[in-house]
Length: 313
Image (cartoon, rainbow, N blue to C red; front, side, top):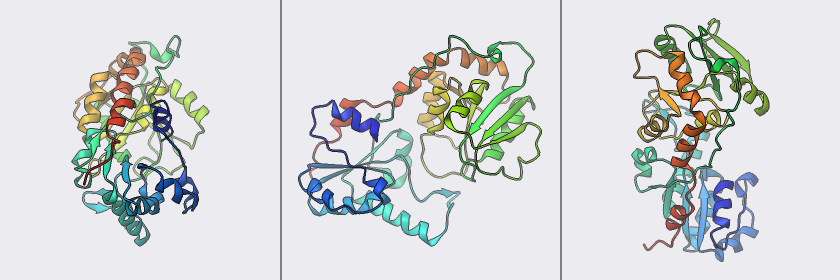
């Protein structure tokens, strides 16, 4: 959201930013702000600002909600989290979503979600900068006999499908890979004790960048039975660290089209084999690939402003 606020601040708009989601509660001084505004711009999770959506609707203001998560999270049609508390939160989230006059999403993949059918796909993501590739570790050399070194960073739960992604890595590389997992979450039982998997635990940003610099690529995994849309943010982090991505999981058509077209990564679910040279060829051009990938999603201020006008109902 800081990226969007920064972009709009240079557009000649009368813009006031309030970080209400971090407060996690209603603040009365925002009541006057809503009353004197023409547009109230919110972002997911809307659960944290549903009261502002309600007041904006009551005062007849235009509500524009930026959506980069969709709830409830389901796998094969079954809720990932079935707790009553989570069900209530999801209900509030989607009520605020329905109250919004306009919905903006960062990728066309979100438009397949029924509750987001009226949304507009707009370039609004943060821009990432091409990494400096003037020098690098010896792993850049082609033709050596080392196994493919892959980094996975992030949460581990059933929505990631990490065990299935690891099995596919094993198949396409004929077992010639090493997966480094940087996560504070425990490994799933299927991955515990595997010689080709190393659990590093949770790493801070500096140490994660250091580990990434010694890897050939990063793994983006999403369970194949994941029902929702997505724009995997981990892709941007790997590219900023100077490594291309391997993707395994649910088909996100727009995301995968850009990933392949830009040269920023490889979708491995449909591949029969993958060599280290295949990946290093991507890594050799990662600076240009990063720019191409970023440009496909990075904030277009003119495009965004065009979707912020008053809504006639």
